Length: 129
Image 1: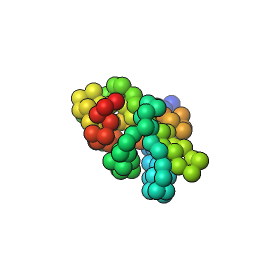
Image 2: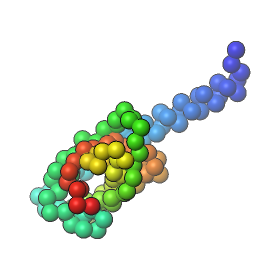
Image 3: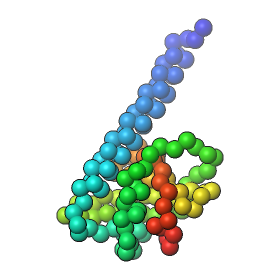
Image 4: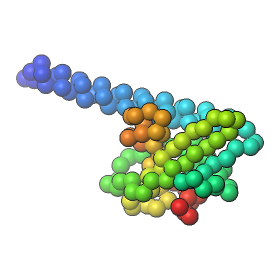
């Protein structure tokens, strides 16, 4: 029979997982709203270098979603910055260790989403980085 301490421990773990999921979900919604309302004129940089054709990357980021793990991990990080109308949104994209076109999307605005992916994307828009 589980003791009270074990139940409290299990409840704490479950609550932490639920909170991390909720923050990730909120970050995805915030990302989608910002990117879907971009004006015709905006700039996107990757590691400080302007991206010539950013629409493919932004479309991919908008579709970021949780993925069932496949025993890989993020390797090199590409810092993406989107600017429009005086507003900026930043992302850290970790290239997957097994698939060089898959990226783990981190949203550094919040501590939880800066350490836990908000989703993964697949794109070749960052092949030069």
